[in-house]
Length: 79
Image 1: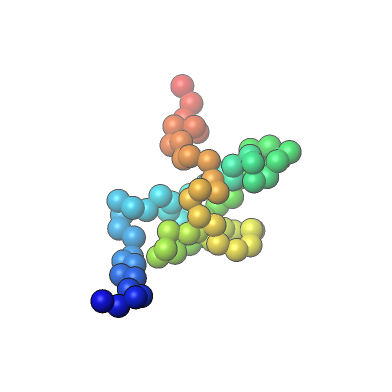
Image 2: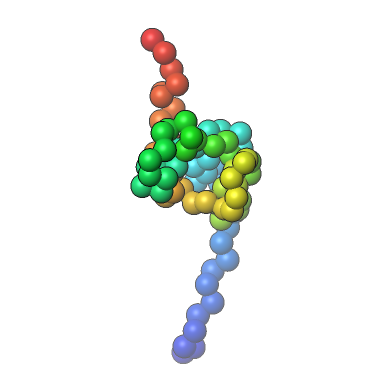
């Protein structure tokens, strides 16, 4: 019995697993950027990587789903 097991290869995300899409807006949680209002914490997704992380326009590095507020698709709707 081997001591170290190989990790199974991570499959690319399917449409069901994707939490973000290119060009959609995402907002960082307030704990990550304290003292900034919602508009200054909101960025547009540039690319979605196969591991589920995203890169953003005008903001460095890759970010995971947990860094953002839950997505509310009805937030921008008006009555």
